[in-house]
Amino acid sequence: MSRGGWTEQAEGEPDALLSALGSKYSAEILCAAGTPKSAQALSEDIEIPIATCYRRIEELVDAGLLECEGRQLSTEGRRTNIYRRTLDEIEVDFSCEQPQFSQKRRTEAKNQLEDQLEH
Image (cartoon, rainbow, N blue to C red; front, side):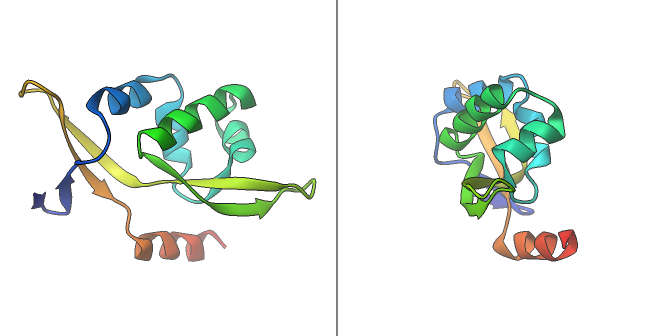
């Protein structure tokens, strides 16, 4: 179902989504990951320990809220994964037996536009 750009979330378990969203720093990581960033960059941007950042990234990827967009060379010359959020907004409806999610997914066109504005 779609309404004004919103689609019903079919994938992912409600518990996994709520757990990922409810973890400390998850919202900050999603906000910071509007453009592709490494775990190190996310950790530095929101000032959290790198180990915590990796744990939150794993939860967010498993919940389908963040995705690995590729790999890039770090300043130390190592290949690192870069991540970007998969949506811009999420709505949770608790009026049913199970939480229902609607979301505004990010389009490839929006990602490309933001990449151009970033550089």
